[in-house]
Length: 69
Image (cartoon, rainbow, N blue to C red):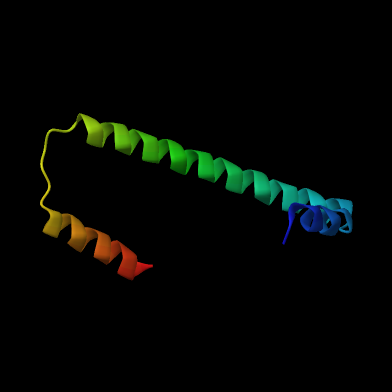
């Protein structure tokens, strides 16, 4: 769905429903910002770390994360 299509559909909703949809979009946007800031903090922490990680350990963790989704 394109942005124009989404706006057209939003315009067709009642004012109350449109407000609810916009509120959900704002909530999702805030959650995305929080997630991004957590990712940035984790990346900065990882860059400051001098600890080495074995590839086999990292691969196992990534595989487990991938499988859980």
